Image 1 (cartoon, rainbow, N blue to C red):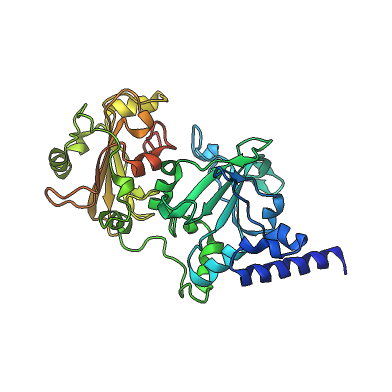
Image 2 (cartoon, rainbow, N blue to C red):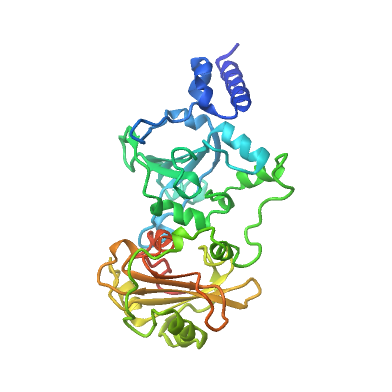
Length: 380
């Protein structure tokens, strides 16, 4: 038997054993060759995760997102290629049930953008390995984390660390919870996963819609699904400009469309890239001169009184609500220096989805922006 046939046979047997076991927790029963392929990274007594062996490259590869610097000037928060691998048993379970099982492991291998020119033409081509990250769903270890997910990084340069601690929940979970299409996983960006789920025995008859009814995410918030992530973590700051920071006054300000007098706004509506509406629904941003001047100066921190208002629309273009951010103190203090507000109704005195300084869901998603401002500049 050739080495290729041997490897194929071992791989097939390993998948069969993993499927029967339901997960890789029974690795000890396999012979070393089988175990090396399906073994998941292990945890230490102190809660750190051991760096997985390179056999994760033989897991199920589902895609490679890329948000390069050249498309996200001046610098993208995630400029590398992200090769994503999922443990075979976890992939099979998701394919067959449409759910991520307890113990699910995803590995993300980071690769730099190398050349932007090849014999085939202009594009983005892989350079060198730059880092390694992991995501683990574990209801026992992470019982108190949203969705029981935890996120790990072994570094963004080589040599990699041997172990990694979980990131604080607010650093990753809040954004994944609000923006990911399927149980904290961004399946909307992976057609392999959408197709697998659609064709699974229990996974439903069609691929997941990228945008169903407007404001499904916000309705989840209002029914309590994201309550913890929407609670203020700091005292609300006083208004520093024209945008009020008390609910009644702000609601009236928004309903009167006073924000449209701000000197800087996007030229029109564009598809949302965040959880304010479902992905792809229209939004439009307005900002005051203080914030616009700071963005123009490429400041690392925006001054007190920086203000932005985002209109949020339904699929048919009906105005459905607003999101607001106001800088109320000199330092950003990890997002607590910003007042955040969101309301999913245009009715008088509608209850806000969230209101206050230091809202974890808000600053968690906005943490990759220029001092928490994600809008492209210059405004389009």
